[in-house]
Image 1 (cartoon, rainbow, N blue to C red):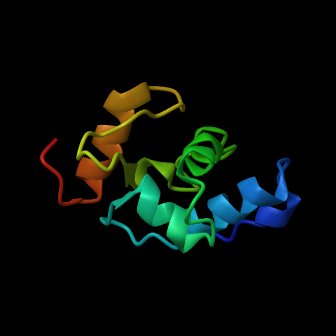
Image 2 (image 1 turned 180 degrees about the vertical axis):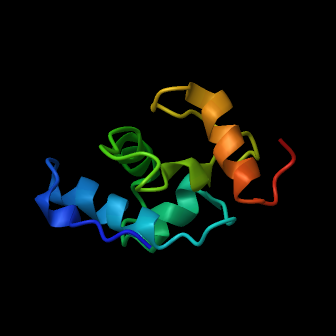
Image 3 (image 1 turned 180 degrees about the horizontal axis):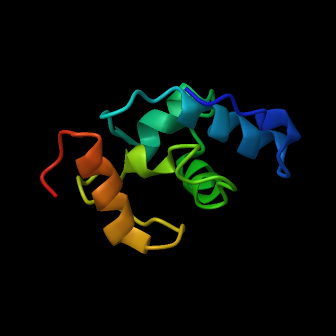
Amino acid sequence: MTYIDIDSLPGTDFQRDVWRALTRIPIGTVVTYAQLAKMCGHPNAVRAVANAVGKNPMPPIIPCHRVVRSDGKIGGYSAPGGVARKCELLRQENAQLDL
């Protein structure tokens, strides 16, 4: 596992809370944005959490590709390669999704 000093990254305290929670999602596991909001201690801030995920400065090192929409759709991926890259990363991790 790669050590990431989240506190040294540019961003707000809220964003860093979200990014820390992302690092706790195990390989091959996916969570929804709502689940991630609970994981990072902001259960009523799902949209803000999703925005913080989109501002992730280190994808896929900080694994934002492991977050999907509550309706089961894959959602976006702001890193190079977009959604196709997100799907590929999840396939490489043997994530249990119908991609």
